[in-house]
Length: 142
Image (tube, rainbow, N blue to C red; front, side, top):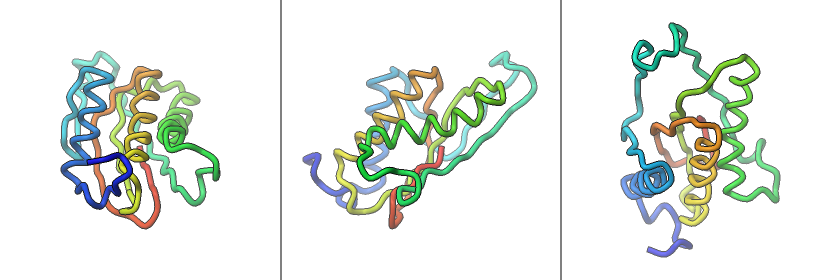
């Protein structure tokens, strides 16, 4: 299927496969393939505090008109990281929910995921998995 095709023609299973392939290609790690995940705090040797964060990116309010889809993916990660870093927290992983308009092109979806994965690699954070739903506008919630 070509990269100009709309994501509505792909379906959720194929979108998840695209994410899994991109993450594995860039990190060598497989996704959990679930909407939930846990860290064993003892095994991770990260203490006894778990800090959670959620800062939703909504395309109509958070994305300037000339921002590329790759930059949108990066921004969704970095805006959440900044909330944690200013509190002295070292993020361990990302679980990302994606709200995708059905007319979004496959190439733009791939650019978003590349932006997310590259940012997570840059800051040494594992992209664990998440959820995908159809929405009227692009929404990313790490």
